[in-house]
Image 1 (tube, rainbow, N blue to C red):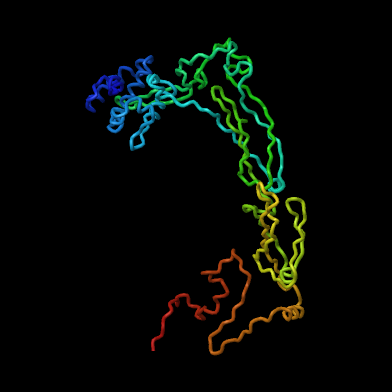
Image 2: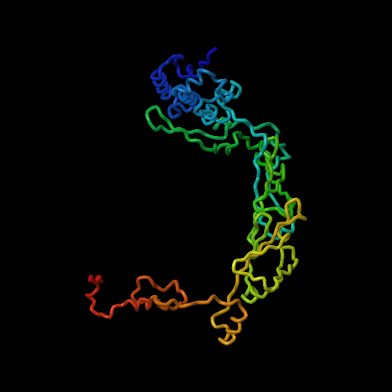
Length: 413
C-alpha cells in the first residue's frame, strides 16, 4: 500500500503538481507559523519536512518508492541525500513520526567519549622507561541516587520547553513562505532534556546524576616508546547516565627536545665538533649516554675525518619497543674546527707543509693575459656589485676625468 502521509500533511493528493504543493505549503506555513501560533511548533516542523521532501523531484521519487519506513531504514538516493539526517535536524530525538519505528530518533550511544591527556616525557624517559602517577578528575554515576538525579529515585520529568531533546528551535522569516531555523541549547533544562522539582533533587549530585571523582593512574612508559604514542586505560573515562560503557582515558606521550640527541625511529643522531688536529691525527672523547653510561668514542690517527663526515656506533641507539635488548644505532656527524689565520710562524708552516701530501704543481701560462687578484674575507654587509667605490674595478677606470665622455665605441679599421 502506498504511503501518502507526507501528501496528507500538505493536504494534496499523490499526483499533485509542484505548483499545488508549493501553494498549500505556503498556506499552511502561514497558518501554523510559530510567531502566530506558538503551540503549533511540531505541526510547523511536520509541514516543513513534508515540503522539503515533496518539493524536490529526486526526494519525492525516493519517498514514493520506499515510503516513511524506507526512509527510516536509511535509504538514500544517488546524490547522497539522507532524509534521516534532515529529520534529525528538525526534530532531534523525538517527533511526530516516532511511531514508525522511531524514525527521526538518534541511536543512543553505547559507549562514552574518550578523555585524552598529553603527557610530557624526556628522551631519557623513553630510553630507560618510567612509571609516573597521573591524577585525573572524572564523572561517575551518583551512588546516592543511582544516576536518577532525584531523592525519590523517580525519573525526572521531560522538559516541556524543549520537548525533552535538550535543544530549542527558533524561527526567523527570511522571505515569503521561507523561514530559517536556529538551534540552541535549552536554558530551562541546561540541555539535559529533563527537569526536577527543586525539593526532589538529589542532595549529592544536585540533579546532575553524576559526581566528580578523583583517581590516580599509574602510567607505565615502556622502553622504546615513541613521541605521540598512546597509552590506553579502558573504561576509565567519564561515566554517563543511560550510557552502558564509559569511555577510555588515552595518554598521549609528548617528547621534549634533547640538547644532544635527536631521535629518528630507533636510531639516535648527534653532532660533534673536533679541531683540525684531531681530524688528521685521531681523537678520543667521552659521551654521556641516556642511561648514565659513558661511551669512549675514539678514532685512530691516519683515518682522516672530513667536515660533515658521519660515523656510526652500532647498537647504541634507542631500545626497541617490546624488545628492549635490541637497539638501533648511534650516528655522529662531525664538524671540523680549523685554526685561525697565521696560527704558526712561517718557518713552522713550511715544516707542516713538508709533512702533508704535496700540493699540486702550478705553472703560470705564457702568452695569456693573466691578472693577479687578491682574496679577502667576505662581508655580507658590504656592497660590491655596482658599487663605484669598490677598489676591484680600478683597473678598468678611464684616465679621462671628463664626466661627459661616458660612451664606449669600437674602432673600425
